[in-house]
Image 1: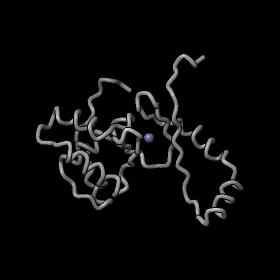
Image 2: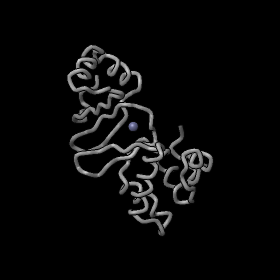
Image 3: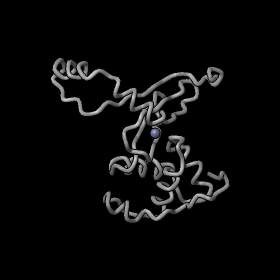
Image 4: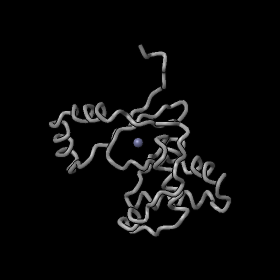
Length: 154
Ligand SMILES: [Zn+2]
């Protein structure tokens, strides 16, 4: 992938938005395009900083409200963080995240390792939790938290 390939600022998202019953505005297309184009799990503020350089009419409140609308429509997921600034992800499939507790950076865990990790959680423990808590557990959401240590690489 070339770093210098221009990202289409307004991908055609009309059909996708219509499927999810979302009103399709130019700002929404630009914002969703920017969210899809990154795997950095940006905050509303990050996206506002990026988009306001091109579009002076966009406000932080609009960015925040639109991201929340994407989440409600199932087009994005919200990742809560201890700092209070949620991060957003256009990948809505269940995948694991790892958060650097120093920088707050959130990254995706490689899919195969994430799946192996979740699959390794003993089924009988989940069943015990279900009966102990009178709960039907439908989904496991795990966040890994640690400190980025590139010196650990061999
Ligand atoms: Zn992610």
